[in-house]
Length: 341
Image (cartoon, rainbow, N blue to C red; front, side):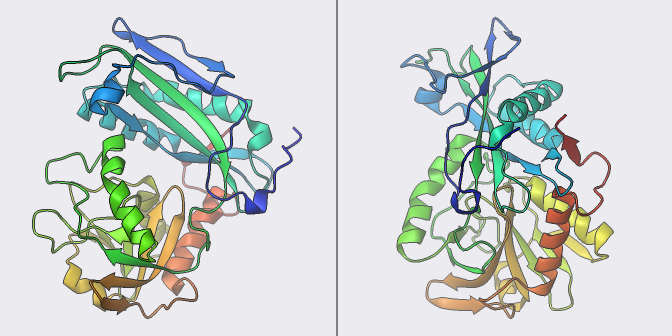
């Protein structure tokens, strides 16, 4: 299929309308068959549950063109399961895993002309989401819901690509203990907007959030999990019930153990330890890994030995191996790659 006339190398991380999107409605206790549509407009009641009480969850995954020209998605089954977990936490009906994957496949097939070519540095970002669509005025779950999926070609999440970034320790809390920090709910991201706008105004790329209870332990950023590398090359990832279970992080942990033979520690990470690490990175679907060169804690700078010029050596191996798996250059573990046929 002929590709759209897009400057793939310079599109940035933004929304570009594509041809088709998927829609399914939940009514009377069940989901309808679902359909593809050209219409990108969502029409709902002014009193819809999503507008009144933020009853919405979402996911994010990508389609890639591999080295041999195939179009693939990376571990969509994990996105499907995480959306089920998110929906259940907000008293929303689960959209079945097999239907979630089928909807993703339909969207990619319908928008193949927007899947960036191999080597362009761009990907097709896929956004499944669900929201309460029926009127709700008392505080309770909606009775009807809509599940939708759209796709948009995107460039790197951070404009500098894989160049190390500077982040700050936030004065705000991202998630409370026993709250909703471990699900992908829109309300979590709304709460982070003021903090990220403030960080950008101050010249930082992101925030480091500490645990709300004691403010002594590292949690995550507004949209990514942390990875640390010790001076003896161990990979350390923070563990907390209020951290979103990142699919990219879980994949990198497996890559570290099984492909690179690294020792991995998934544990609580105290902020006072951070100064002793050799490397730091942020991982998530959008950026894969963004290296962190410096963390600023109220004027006190923590500068990692890996520096501000390039990824640290262990972070680079992790990045190259995972992206190699995603792009078909390295053999993937069974079940990780969904080929769009």
